[in-house]
Amino acid sequence: MPEGKTTLAIHLQPGAKRNEIAGFRDGVLYMKVNAVPEKGRANQALLGLLSETLGLPRSAFSIIRGQTSRNKVVAVRGLTTQELQDTLARELPCKDFLHLAKGQGLMVQ
Image (cartoon, rainbow, N blue to C red; front, side, top):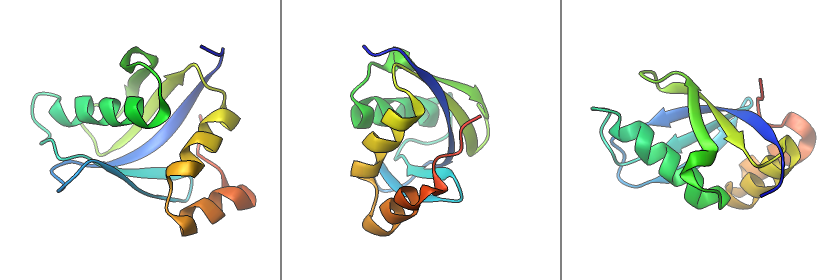
């Protein structure tokens, strides 16, 4: 696994019809999960979706801020910021990819 660590700002919508990346706006990645926000189920679904999307084990992700909020900051180990942007760009809707490509970039902290 490549060395690297970055953080990712996420707005999570629990209780959605399906798990998906909904888009990218103002440096924040919008994601939806079908799990309900009870007993950490939505957070676990979020980490699972990130793991599947980015091809990293679940242990590479941790929620460092926003455990009980829709607005979260997730630490990602194993990818640099550029690698993370490149990988997510392949998953984003076309219009959101254009924003990412124009340098608006992910909000990292």
